[in-house]
Image 1 (cartoon, one colour):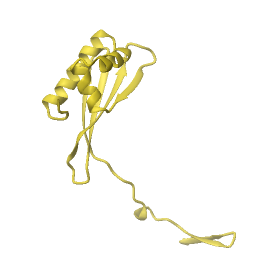
Image 2 (image 1 turned 60 degrees about the vertical axis):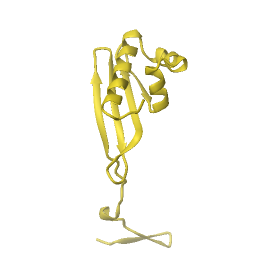
Image 3 (image 1 turned 30 degrees about the horizontal axis):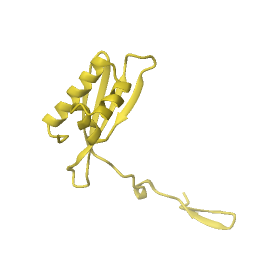
Length: 120
């Protein structure tokens, strides 16, 4: 099999899969699930395999609507603002969650603080 081909007078070299480099990102994950919401949390690692401080992404799935609605939060300041009853944070969270869902979301944030994934 040839390793190169000529097209319109230009030679092209066939790429080999071992030459292909695809960046890999490692992460930790946690999932919290109730009958109303699913909270999938990931924390990305640096090249040395250590997690970035406060590099959290929370994907929440609202199961109270059909089709399910998926949203994300990745701002640690906003997350902390929600549990500290910051007016803007609560208003925005209130647009995303119903009353019970907001309590569940706060539980998730508190748990992330408890395990050291977020700092209050």
